[in-house]
Picture 1 (cartoon, helix red, strand yellow):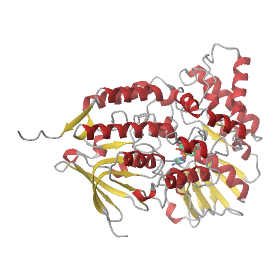
Picture 2 (cartoon, helix red, strand yellow; picture 1 turned 120 degrees about the horizontal axis):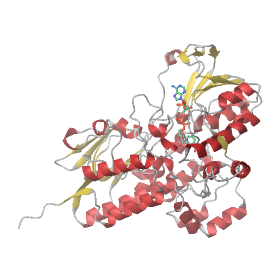
Picture 3 (cartoon, rainbow, N blue to C red; picture 1 turned 60 degrees about the vertical axis):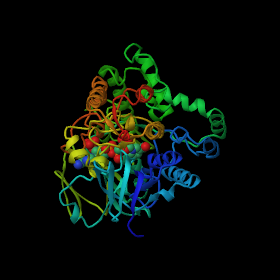
Picture 4 (cartoon, helix red, strand yellow; picture 1 turned 30 degrees about the horizontal axis):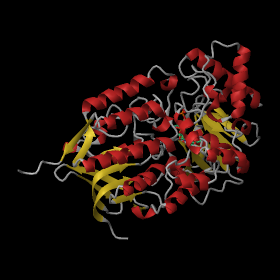
Length: 540
Ligand code: N01
């Protein structure tokens, strides 16, 4: 296909949950659109992450679009938590149903975006030689779409195969009878490890910081549950909005410190059995009070010791250096039980760090582990990574990397001062990665569509945050996070997984409903805090 040279109203980057809905909504406004997507099809993270065991940790009937009421009724989720294949099939269905693919150019990565101040257009270029001029640049490029591959010395000379969970080969990786190593024990590692252990001759898990893992307790959804939920889907969605993070979680109003040990432990056990995120809702102060948090953390450590046969392995799996919940609570299926298998070895990198990757495998300070396949479950340069990789150039040559040298500065996670008409869907400083993405994406895209309609109606050419409003919001995001325990771990939420990345909490913790109310209030007050440039009055 020859390179595209076009003038459009908006370029949309990404064909995942956000990009698909953005194209749907903006097309409704009659805008001329050009989408770009690096993958060979729609689905975003749910296309790339096709590693065995990949599954969402937000319940499927909540982690889905609400904008299409017929789709809500027609689509039937099979399990409590959607498997990667099922979520991808859903997004492909949405793309077909609404004829969204035709707006995208696939296998095409946006390589540069430069604001032309005279023409008031973004000039967008791709790795296929496309050059598109657009009034608006809608970054729906995802929060977990730039894999983090740590620069392990010697990785290029390894004679076996190296795969990252975030770019897993579609045809799969045959590990049967092979020696496999996995580096990383976050959400991706915890899901892939039990699956690989079933087939590998031997599995070595290279763990740096242990994560707290709770049972996902995934199960097929009963016909009755699906029927009842569909019958009251609007109310069900409202219940999601009434929670802090946009997924249904019953938060016990009691403090963990006000109840007896017996009551506390019974509550933890009940929530452990329910599975999913429930444990963190056991008491109201788990993420606010260190002592309350410690009761929960210790309860889980005891659970690990109960499940894992070898006491040394259990000890190594017990997190002790940060509060439970300060790194994303990981949901697993048979995770701790996997360490009771004869063909699984836990390698503690805190005791003996990785020195290098050799031709044969991984060498730590203590030993060399010979491998045929090395799996990197080492996560992502989250939230800001994809935007900074593109590094748009705004007004007066200002680059995003310059503007965000000490961490992201945004207004509501939707816009950045100095970057007119750049709109970020679930950008830093919005609930994004601590919320139910499906819900937050719809809220953002609906708001963006209203903004663009307002601009058209009032002849407004450009929109960008007022620097003062942006700083006040950025301060507010940090002030809300600071007193909580969310900031007390070296997590990717804090940018701590990427060397040199500024250490700030990247998402807004104030709750999805207060956040939405703020966005709606800003709109109702004529987009207060944004600078809107109206068309020049025509000469008298
Ligand atoms: O990535 P992570 P992830 N040497 O950053 C280790 C979502 N998600 O892909 O903790 C050795 O959490 C690192 O160790 P440490 C979800 O939001 C959701 O697992 O930094 N080890 C850690 O163990 C999730 O939070 C789902 O010490 C190194 C691991 O790699 C987010 O994506 C499924 C290392 C990375 O863990 C990211 O999860 C999957 C090094 N140099 C993902 N560098 C579900 O919905 C990193 N590590 C269930």
